[in-house]
Length: 351
Image (tube, rainbow, N blue to C red; front, side, top):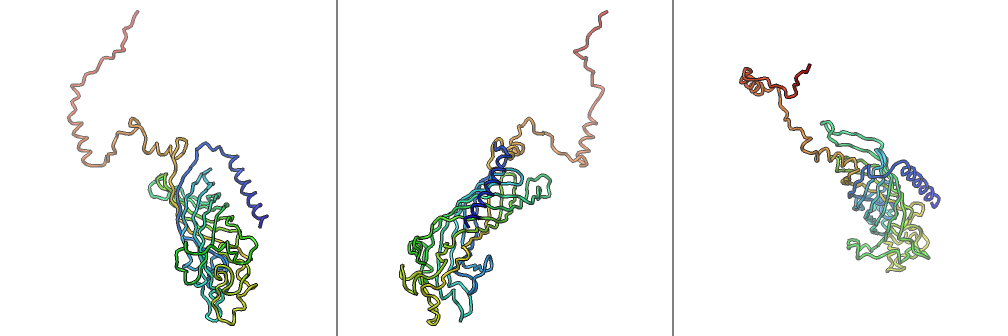
């Protein structure tokens, strides 16, 4: 895993260095700031549809969908490449009580664990626009465009999973128990609250009236920790035993299967890490400056001096009223009263 992280860091560093070396950042291109909001889901050891967990989106339960929100800034390097950096708040949760399975074979429900985790993430990603429509409207040059893009980047986040008993499952999260200090799986040292991730995904942006951008994107966070839900390896305690009044092992299944949920038995799956996905909407506004191309469009559209504005109004020359007025005006003219003016620049010839 460490080799993969180092490899991704080298690739991102090389690409960023190439981009910065080819362009002079003098404020000539786009810079916008905005916010995002939407829904997020969690893929891990707790919860799920069936007794055997599935990977990616096959194990989603809508009850475990939560909210996410954040702020971001975007710098447009050229017409295809952007750098996006932001801060996100992400909430994830899971409950074995929401799992589904046969009545006689329900190991996830018998395990009876639940968690909530509030995550604060600092991220940065590289966006590449692979498809663009410059004009979405019927009217020419209405400055409404569509961009489809893909992105990949890196992030650092802080997390602190909390747990509760079934009777307290509906209590506010502040009343839940911090699981990390309890070392629920018998760890010598508690796992780190700081994690790293590789987010990637696809998105679309509609830019209207030059200054506002509306977007939507799907984002998948490939995390490098298996403790977002505090479950990873084996049981360290028998049912009802251990710290926190037995919160680490809340087995509530048949007595005949209790031996499969005791000390040393499988509690989670350390083969796969806990991942997060989200579907977000975005809104941002372009920050104008004198060197920004949007500022030039703004001047042309709204700040043109009056002396350069056209005073002529559009007239339909096929209109019958216009033709009558034009004829009457010519009829009133009397060419006999016109006198030719003598030029002031006329010079007499000298011989």
